[in-house]
Image (tube, rainbow, N blue to C red; front, side):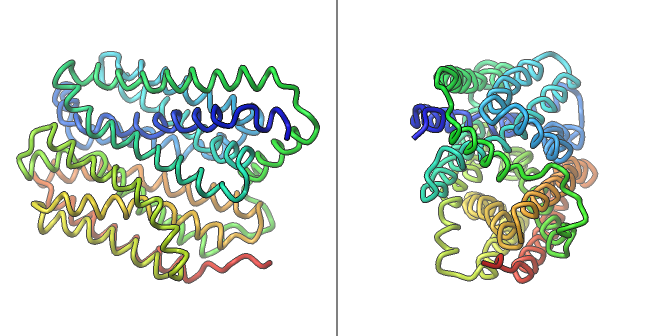
Length: 408
């Protein structure tokens, strides 16, 4: 076993898991205090939706570029870039003015996308093949833990110190990640890599990031299944970021909850996803993928329709929604792997589906906020989200029918 491949596994995985706390929570953190932010900046709800849309736009635009960064700089350095970038973006976001808020979110989105590409490389390289699903599930769970904590606690912190400082205080977790990952980098650089370790790292990076030119004469990447998966991913991400952005405001306006209680209700949406991420692989062992796709899609429709016609049961809808949002992401990734006929095609499909899907989803939060402003309530936006969920259900089921296992 080479020193560079496993210099200190607990340090590698501990660093990954602490880093995961900062890989989604900076995007989610403003949502429990979105109404306060909008009021302080004097902006409407549609404009406020840009706060969570800006980082998602970076996901869409930088998907191919981030793969280049990881391949040239290496996954460890790329993850450190992510953590340091999140810190920088958090401080920029704390400067006075809505423009600085957006600039900080753009920085955060750009560097998190680098981490999104780097982490699977590290897991693939440093984990035994039989433990990759377990480590991936644990990492996904930590992403949701970060979202849960920020959704639950940002409003109480804002009550005590103001929303700007409350958002900045979450940077302490990122600082811990920088220190832990920095310790790993120092230790790994003291180790002398052997030829097998260098080859293993090169193969891991190439396998996960894939060839960078994702459009070529063969294989044909723009297959019908790719387009349908792109639409499904766009609907799922659009609905997710719309609800994530506005759930606390909906709970406050419709149910009359205070900001702390509204944040607690919204945190269920993030918290149940921890369990949902682990439940979907179990369902896939016993049910065909079209059945799992139908369950996940119906769950999304149930969430948005339930919030529209019975908002007083929001805790129930958030519980179902946590399962739906975690299950949807895993199901779409599984369908991409199933449909791809080679590693090259898998990398190309991933870039097209995620890049295009995130681009579609950037309209979600601003349009939802705009519909609220125009209609004067949340009923119209929720009916539109229900329609989006129906489209998601249909495209996910169709994609599951179109996907075929790779030939042996």
